[in-house]
Length: 573
Image (cartoon, rainbow, N blue to C red; front, side, top):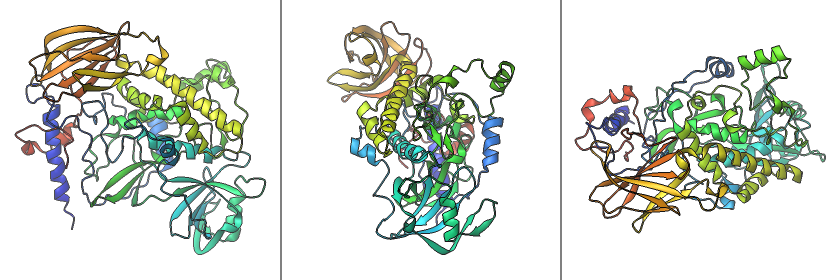
């Protein structure tokens, strides 16, 4: 029998380590031998948490009205490079190691989707809510949820979800396998035990007539065939949605408040890029999975049918992406001015393509984009979170975005062309808005006595961009810069490491004429390596570096478990 004591002890020790790591300069060294770490040990073996439901109405109240979980402060779950380690929430992919076009097109898909060698048995369905749907079992025994487009807007929602699934996957999130399928009515067979929730909200038998009734509500091609987004059921035991604030009390691995997780805070920038305005708890799912001999909770983003310019019911309103669904200030202003004041974006022309809907280019402003519902993690996003996501978005090339849009399988080539152009334009606006943080540098590395880096914004500027670096010795025990070792002006993205008798060095990198600064910490031994990065919007503060921060209630849980030698917060379990 699995012991709950085992996972409790695991985290008590882990969190005690974190207390050492995040403590003040008098109590612990800043960097420890395994920094920077790449894996968060949040996949310890745990007993199954309870399944919980989240009412759509309560989700609306909590996010649209209550604005729960807005606490402020920096993200807690980052390593010393400011990156999110691989975890049950996130896995670095395209930005860490560029994926091929074929890999981008495939995304999370393992095969070709529902087995077309035989009939699909319909085991459930729905006709209420935002969209109609059917649950099927194919010849291989795999279960899928079929989601359709609204009449008159064929390919709008299904195409968007197919593309967005692959983009979120490339960005590092856990997502379902979503396949585009085209089929005729005779592919579907009935299950005598099947029921569905009908228009009245009551459970009814799902016979052939009921299936026909559901299909009457969805879009069809002129030849009578149907197109659907077939979402394969996730492996494991569904536990219900996660919230964008707080933690799941019965998951011993879930220690960082969700509004303080960088991958959820930075998600706001990705949601703005794809116009994922319905990015709230109801469109997430926790699943209790078994992997590598352990059972734990994996956290998924699901339901991307409302990305880009439409949703299950058709194109989005002009206000979507610019106002909350319950935006009191805007409502009052509109009432006084008959809706004309401060809303020039309502007059932006749409491309006039049913499969695209309203996906704006001209009036897209990344810093002003809003989801329909207030999201506490989004509300807590700071410049570091935004930079973290923006560099991942800017990493997609024009050709890669074209390849991703092609997975939407639009019959109208204008839809493919417009969505590609819009993704590129919105990507560039995001880069301009956020990549300048700290000077716009990343990918620091040590090679042959030099620290090299990537200039993320130089392509948009003059080819003769210049940089400066100030070098200091760094006292790892106190967390303070000590001796000044010199200053260099650089004509290219490479700086010579100073010859100094110090275990750690820190370089303050800046762009000439730019206020931002990026601190780069180098472990100065036989094989020097970059072990820490901090970005500052203006100047060089004299503060002790702190990255991962363990919540107080977890630090207090295990004072006796503190080890004699400090180790990093995210050691291997």
